[in-house]
Image 1 (tube, rainbow, N blue to C red):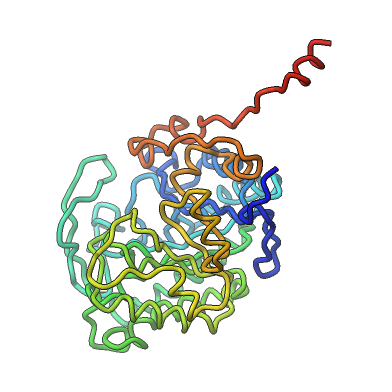
Image 2 (image 1 turned 60 degrees about the vertical axis):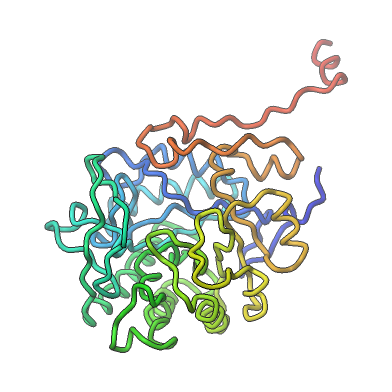
Amino acid sequence: MSNLLINTPYTLGSFTLKNRVVLAPMTRGRCDVGSNVPSDLMAEYYEQRAGGGLLITEATAISPVGGGWANAPGLFNDAQCSAWKKIVDRVHNKDGLIFLQLWHMGRQSHSAYQPNNGQVVSASDVQIPAGETTLPDGSMAPYEKPRALTLEEVKLTVQDYKNCAALAKKAGFDGVEIHAANGYLVDQFLQTCTNKRTDNYGGNFENRSRFLVEIVEAVSEVYKPSEIGVRLSPNGNFGGMGSEDNDVFFSALAAKLNNYNLSYLHVIDGLGFGFHSKCRALTTSDFRKVYSRTIMSNCGLTKEVAEGMLRSGSTDLAAFGRLYMSNPDLAERFQNNWPVVPEAEYMVWYSPTGAKGYTDFPFYKPEKSDFEEKKTAE
């Protein structure tokens, strides 16, 4: 057995994680085709990976307006809640812990996904500068120009986060993660490249952080703060993001969040998901200077890199994405020093291929020793 720090238990609020390996949230698009209700196949997928200390679900739309990805799940009605409960129960039956990631896509959505084909929304009417999105029928279309949420709609959206958290509680989730990263709606309020508002939600640091803070406070009426995580991506350019003051702003934001006794701060500090190059990149070491609670690192980690970060004290938990796709028993492989297989190919990440590239990755089977072979033969 390995004696690496990544394999040791970790106290996260009232939970004891059996190791420090976390399943990173990854959109996989495996609801039944044309549906946003979690499928039985998804239950198998999460159950397979329950050996990690914590599982974070794929991004889950908090409302019909918040969605915008084909075959990605939501949690805003009873049917979705019942389907998620089946998944949670199967993870719990494997002694696993699971958090739901709360998601609103904002300007990354498309009118084809919106109720009554409505216009997509954002912090401001700033369009993603380039690129295309996938429509429900699989065709591609340019991103659309969003409209700014009104003050009343901002308040209603905060309530949507709270309502989704309440359904997550009903489904049995151990906690929730607020997705404030990767250029989705909360990130669109945080960054100057997308937030051009002149009201109490735009301009200075306090105003741009207000939307996220209000969400944290609203969700804290459902879950304890120690059962709520927040995910940030200060370095990423996904969704046309990146602002000149990100290094200063996100350090200040982490210091502010330090006062909320959250479960963890989930930082996409690796640059493998793209780097905007508009200011210096922030690392978990930077966040550690201003954030004294649990920090989770993510993006392109290997066992060796994660172990080094854990031993340095810059991070407490290590989230794995692509490597966890192709190694459903990743935590067990780390614990036993078993080999890991290469990352899954891009073509199976999001495609509606069913079990292929999703639940069909094999578990490691140790070769029998000579002694075991002899004993079996007898």
